[in-house]
Each structure stands twice: as structure tokens, then as C-alpha cells.
Amino acid sequence: MYRLIRYSQPLATSAYRSPWTGFDREINSLFASALADQAPDAPRSIPVSVHEDKDNLQVSAELPGVDRADINLELLDDTISLTATRKQGEQVLNFERSFSLPYAVQTDKVTATYENGILRLTLPKAEVAKPRKIAIA
Image (cartoon, rainbow, N blue to C red; front, side):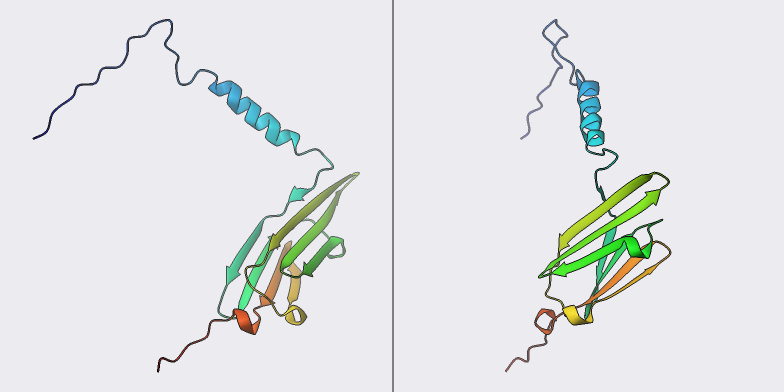
């Protein structure tokens, strides 16, 4: 058997505080702190997408307006570091992104192409990282 319990909202009193009180202050503070990190000379993050197939890890990075010569790409152990510089008149914008790879890769077979502002990396998986079919005896 169920029992019905009736709930009534507390009466508005001088002690009652709206849940929205101070919300605008918090939002303004959040945006101010986020925008403060974006000083003109501070490095910006590079948008990256990662896709995986059976043999490779495919990484695409968006670098519109960046010259090929201003892109620096390094692979050390299992970490990729990507830095780039874009010149806009007198202003120089720095971009950077670094992340760890989920698998060991064949460093001697890594390829990179840059076309229309998109940097594409193909990172072949090392043999130990590839899935193997195991026969059941």
C-alpha cells in the first residue's frame, strides 16, 4: 500500500534566498577568468581529432592561416607535441597542443601532410599494439 505525502513549498520569508541569487556574479567571474588566460601572447590550443583503424592512428589538426614552415611537430616516446605560429600583420599568434598516444607507434613510418589548413598525421601502430586473433585449442 502506498501513502501519499503532500509537499508544500516553504513560505517566502526574509530568510528565504532564491537559488538564482549571485548566479550572474558567478557567470561573470567564470568568463572573466577564462578570458584572462587568453592574453595576446599566450599560446592557444589547437583543435585536434583522432581516429583509429586496425593498423593506424589518424590525427587531424586545424591550423588555418599557418604556413607550413611555421609548424613544428615532435614525437617523443608516446607523446606528440605540436606547435605553430601564425602572423597577422604585426600580431603573432602561438598555438600548441600536446597529448599522449594510447599505443606504441612505428616512429620511422609516421607521415604528415599539410593542405588547406589541415595537418594530417598517420601513425602506424607497432606490432605489439595490433590486435591478434588467438586460436583456442
